[in-house]
Length: 468
Image (tube, rainbow, N blue to C red; front, side, top):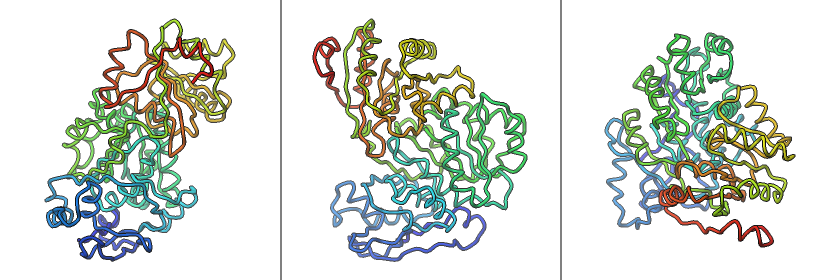
């Protein structure tokens, strides 16, 4: 079974890819296999079928290897089922992958060496040209998982949009663009962002000048398509980041309209921290025989997060929040509210009480949002009060505590909120307040997460010392 992974760019131009593959023998089935990275000396090597069987707990001797081998080597048009991979933590490095020298150098300049599980398992499939559904918890490196293949695929000599990433928020667009630009700028590939809340003229200019990668929110991207300033007829690679939200009712109509402007013969990747079954079903019409890569699919929050859940009277919430903020250490804190008005009011209350706070909610202008983010990242305002806009994919470093001042509407939003802390192996803390009228919603969230949390009455905690 051969597992060579030529880049989409090399395949489309009929050029021989400038990278090496490594031939070896699977330690389980003793069949020849080809890897896109240098095997580590002394470490077992398995073909994809045997690796999958081991991860599912099957005995190599009894696993349906011959069937899986045929499935794995079929052309995309014949492969009717997605291959699901449940990877383990790996010590594989980017230096072992068959990447172009420029991409490898760009990754090195970013001071990144070791691959995360989602990167190790998704990048080879995307380099091969397969469509992909990728699930991994927040902070696991999903952006780089699609940005590396994108850097390899884009052709700097073609002055048309070749890759597009659709994201739900302006802040996430800025974050994703920063990662992609770091990878592709050495190859003179142009990246532009399309999002609301700012003037369109700079975006017009960037598109006229031949932007090859677009990162956009659905509304603004659709505006450009309707005005004729954005042409997607040459798109080879589409990414839906935070796919569960992009395909939900709010964004789905705009996303569908945007996809209708793209060639059907393109590569598509969907990535998210949570991947409910309905997402895969909804996405099936947009993907061709996708590979499914799931990392920690059974985990609803990073294992390094400690949960503190308090039953509380609504009238006590502000006092309780102040107690938590007074007890905080140096690490930044995010306080999640439910509504724009509620977040604004809470931030004003905290500000009047002398807390260094910023508010992030949808009614802010883009300039104001960027100012809030700057204050939070710099430490000038280390307390961020936010609506769910801050729960989607934003990469904040070192968040010590997330406080669910108001409950979210779903277990997915709970997962995304909590995912702001405890990232990439760091410890974190998630505090959740539950009022009497939120009891039913909390039970639904617990059911959706498949777990029960220990709860304490806030009154009891307040009358004891220490807080926790």
